Image (tube, rainbow, N blue to C red; front, top):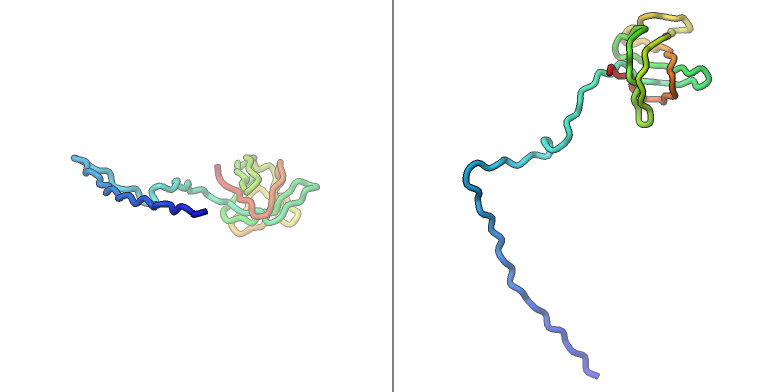
Length: 120
């Protein structure tokens, strides 16, 4: 039995030419322009610890905070708004805290380390 050889078909490649549009042409978008715009948020502080039995979080502040302020607590699995109702520093209730303080906050839901307190 003799094997048949397959013939290779060679096709000529067509040249693709683009016709230039008359009039105005749009400039190409850069990679940076195509990316979504990032919204600048004001971070008040970060959660350093959470106590589940008393629903309290320890927060290291980057900006001042006072009782009555509304904050958004946001993390990889956490996101909720709440009004600050009670704050403590060294087991003493306080109404205002300044930048650099490490305070205890009563939270309405579970938070995790590295969650952010943001001004909504």
